[in-house]
Length: 304
Image (cartoon, rainbow, N blue to C red):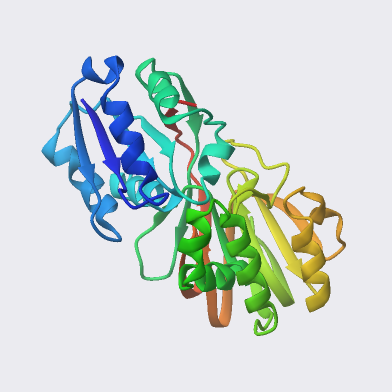
């Protein structure tokens, strides 16, 4: 049984159109399937959480058609995914598709899915004090990028620019809007047991693969692997130089700035006396402390 979870408003209705095309193919007619259309924020997670109860032992693959946010919900709804997961990108960012090399039109990707072409993928995990752990699909970022994500998510221009296939411009507008109001953070970071104190810190980002923000190569050399995740720090930098950093982030050359620091870890703890804004797969929140780890067991991503 193939379970489709479709966000009908993703990509200005592109996800719904993609499912319609797939459902008319000969390959689709030869499989058993069930489709769910999401109706509100968090609905995909709720649907995924009930799959083991509603379809015990008969799910071949969960196929997500939508954006990275929809995939984030499904992965967290499944908790510990024991069935393969597929992603047919139809959102504004689609960084997971870039990172996993999922290319082609929706019908082409679906044909690879039914052929069971797959690759291993190791999720990240983050946990705030007093809360349950949750999965990271693409990235988690603290500070400046979280404030940008919040500004973009709350903006009126995001939908308009996404409809015009100019989603990257949303991030640029959000960046300029946040640049002059953002206050750098004082953080305590523990990386694999080693403690650091960072003052005047703009952002800390952990990524599963190079891409975020709709194609930015935030950590250009990031690779999909078990046990280790790369970490990027930007600190002790002027506001105007931040513009220079983000003007080069699509090419990945921002890592040449002396204020940009990279390292690798398998466990990172971040804390502050003040609330820290963060984003995970584009969804935003705040915390005082957070622990990030990498899962040892891989999930199978079908259709890559």
